[in-house]
Length: 178
Image (cartoon, helix red, strand yellow):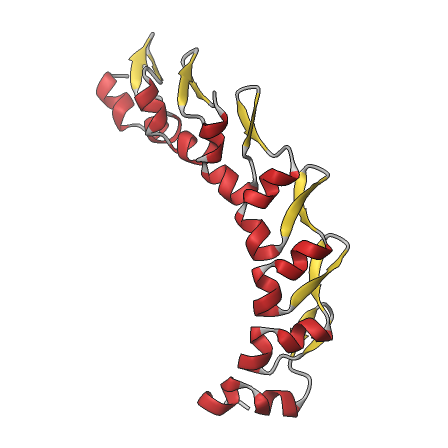
């Protein structure tokens, strides 16, 4: 193994192991860590004991792990999902209503289902179990009702169940998809 091989390795890109030490590729500087996928994805942006690790809440908050999964809280060298606030910062909250911490994961509740993007677009506005599902009111107010005539709830999703709903949709008017 050579220094050049370490710099060109997948380990350099993924976990910052870009330098040769004791015949092994390891992170040697904080810059190695900050350029790695671990920093971007997991907030592991600082060098400690020859490994890239999270050392600050700001590392976690800037990671895609926070944005995607709610792993926004720094605890013992890791970015973890620890509170409702972490879920609220994630994409899953705005898009799917998964804004509350429940059993170690982000999950929906009645308020977050009704406020989610999927409520407006797909009519999935009602909290049932661990999901946001459709009811007739949510379907009638949704984008899929207006665009595709899917205005009635069927098995938790909006469906086109009547010719009248299809005929009233923009899909019918603009694309003759009736």
